[in-house]
Length: 425
Image 1 (cartoon, rainbow, N blue to C red):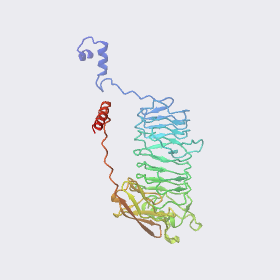
Image 2 (image 1 turned 60 degrees about the horizontal axis):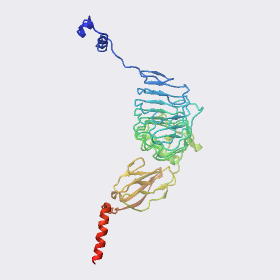
Image 3 (image 1 turned 135 degrees about the vertical axis):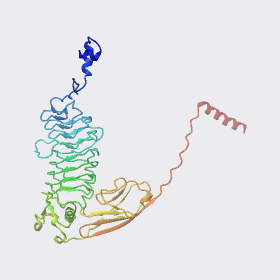
Image 4 (image 1 turned 90 degrees about the horizontal axis):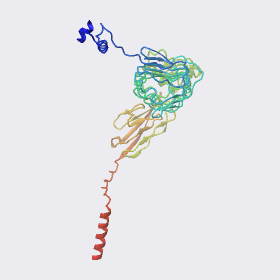
């Protein structure tokens, strides 16, 4: 009877019954619900396939049909060796990607990135760790929401990190054999908030290694082989609130005083730092933050290679060198207009390299003038000045107007006229 009232017919057809059901208002009648996205075989899924678990499934490659709704994807403890290009490109909602304890050696994509990124977060075991030697740039292109990337325990860091700058990542690199962190190791990770480098055999960190990490809030360097850190290493890290430096064989001398002062000024409430002297014996066990100049005999810094006057043409690259005998000094430059330039700043065209060199990628006429290099340690500051002379570039010659080639008829007429002129003479 109700169907007849709605359709206006006394005997509604089956087709009209179907229309009636489809248009039935909610909540008094039936309604259509969105179909649950398929779960890739042989994984298990939950929360409308937003959580996909594929651990210990014997997978040799990343399964197909992973829902674009996925926010958490766990592929740990499989035998995956290669991540193919665009594997994750459609997963724009992905926040956490777990790939540890696989045999991954290559991650493909449209451009190159040759270093093993993170290792397992939290507790990990050594087991069979793959040596990741190739990650192409943009291999994870499109994962704007990714905030934690786990690629398992890796063995060697090669090249530089150039991950998409918009990612908000937490990188876990613990358990690697990194050895040295060079400038550019974390290039492009301007949104990185946390970086863990525990148990990674890090013995040397060069001055500009962390310059791109403008948003870093927590840094863990514990359980490594660090004896010292370059002066002002943390200067670019304006948001750094927690740093872990414990269980390193710190060599306590004048060169570590800058770290003591920085800890007291920048992180006065950081109780987890616990950086303690390993040597000399008289200071062993002493908290670095408690040290001051009274504990050492300090000497003035030495400028091994002072800057010299330089003549350069507008538009060319240029370098003013100011090298010291140790990285345990701070090297800053004073520009002709009085601007203080430090490492981690002036990234577009002028920047201070890790060895103190002032680098110009493209000199302009406005760059001309005296530049002062200032080298500072715990004892005093030395300075040295050099003049940068910039010559104006000669204007390019005017472009010649191209002439159109003569047609065969015009060439014949031109030849005939010249011959006729010659004969008349």
